[in-house]
Image (cartoon, rainbow, N blue to C red; front, side):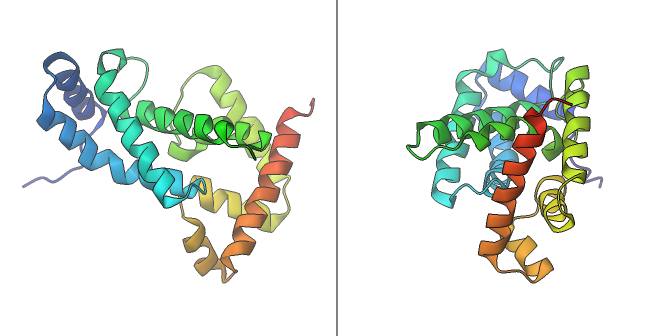
Length: 188
């Protein structure tokens, strides 16, 4: 029996069933597969577990409500859902009184999160700029950013692997983002 992972066409067919027939079984297959992945993605961005839970629920409700807007010719379901979750997170952060503009850099980092989110030319341009910016970080900060966003490791996993205190990992990532934000906005 072949247990290969479902591919983009499988998920597109599930979305078509949700969109056209409002098929709850297809929705639940999508939910069961993507909810833990979205949760991990948001937790890797430093989102508190309770807020990540709310954002995942909201992202999947958005999928149900706006299923007809999904276009498999433009993006895979994974890409679409990660964007929805990221945008919900950015909206959440911007509503916070202590919002930091550094969070705007998240839209650039999501290209690296899945490694395949966009195939548009400007995305590869952004990826190249981001990779160059990461390469100019101090070695430890560059390693942390790569582990977090390219390898999708949680802050706790990074702390364990590098034998660093969790607080140091988080503060180093914050400093890294500040540097990345500055270098991404600086004229080249």
